[in-house]
Amino acid sequence: MQKTSRPSMMGFGMGFGMGYGMGTAPFFKMVVFEQEHFQGKCQEFTNECCNIQDCGFDNIRSVRVECGAWVGFEHHDFQGQQFVLERGEYPHWDAYSGSLAYHVERMMSFRPIYCASHQCSRMIIFEKENFMGRSAEVCDDYPSLQAMGWCSNEVGSMHVQCGAFVCYQYPGYRGQQYIMECERHSGDYQHWRNWGSHSQTPQIQSIRRIQH
Amino acid sequence: MQKTSRPSMMGFGMGFGMGYGMGTAPFFKMVVFEQEHFQGKCQEFTNECCNIQDCGFDNIRSVRVECGAWVGFEHHDFQGQQFVLERGEYPHWDAYSGSLAYHVERMMSFRPIYCASHQCSRMIIFEKENFMGRSAEVCDDYPSLQAMGWCSNEVGSMHVQCGAFVCYQYPGYRGQQYIMECERHSGDYQHWRNWGSHSQTPQIQSIRRIQH
Image (tube, rainbow over all chains, first blue to last red; front, side, top):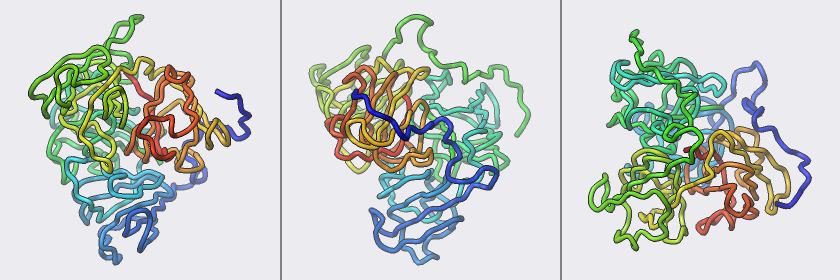
């Protein structure tokens, strides 16, 4: 590699929490567009939207998240497939969806994930339903649960103690997404049917924290 | 949450490196199947395969990674779209592909990622080609580079100092994948055209370490 000066080297390790001031509540901001590639009708949101059609949109086809972590939903009223949305640009549905097998290009509602916190995220996963069987504490990101020692390609139940997580059907953060938050259901997800209205299987092979 | 006994609580934080003995080289093992859902002709691999057709396969449609981290390629001789494969089960193409926009159901070659190391992974990303412009050190997982303070949705060039990383086109580990290794090209990736034979854009919005 060529030697270059690094006048603006950033300390990424200390960068968490940027985007809002110390001691203040995190700010949420997302701009949604009716057409792909940030074209057509658009609107800025700083809070939840339970039905994009009430705002005069037919559908959302691209998204720019400017602050905070959000979750988008396939249907209105926060139903159906879930998509975690962190800061950055999503020029089309393919960019924010996780599941290719179930290809429905719709995002009809969304809301901020208020309890997302990279600094303090902890949950317990259990082998069986109702918090039974073998268990493990999760407080980091795990692209492969099995590589970390988990016993199978399934998780029976979960309890989020603090922060928020996204669980994925396949290794490497792929496939169906399930957003798990300490502030929902008291952090208890005792059966895969509670993971979301779209969940059809207990299969979970990777888990990561959601951060602002 | 119900109170339950936890007879086999695992310390995930100390679990790295499981799957091979202390002080020995990591072991690689992957089983590939010609049909989806682990059906049809299958073969076990512990080393690279530059053309699956030379092994009598028409294509690979499901994969079970039992040890180590691998990279799969769309074409033979390690060309075309790249797919990082960590321990776990991938029952169909949708489960290991990252890009929905470019939907070609092929994996014709693959190889172990020997230098993957979760404990020691570090690279420098640069704003412009040829290691110029602003830079940042990356030694963790970043689902949103912009949330961590990176200046844009693009990366101009990269130098991997140790370990291996996977860079993604979109936030949240989605979209096209680019595997970056300290042992390839001396860790130097000075232009997006060097990221892989499939790369068509400098757009990178999330980066994570690859681990065994």
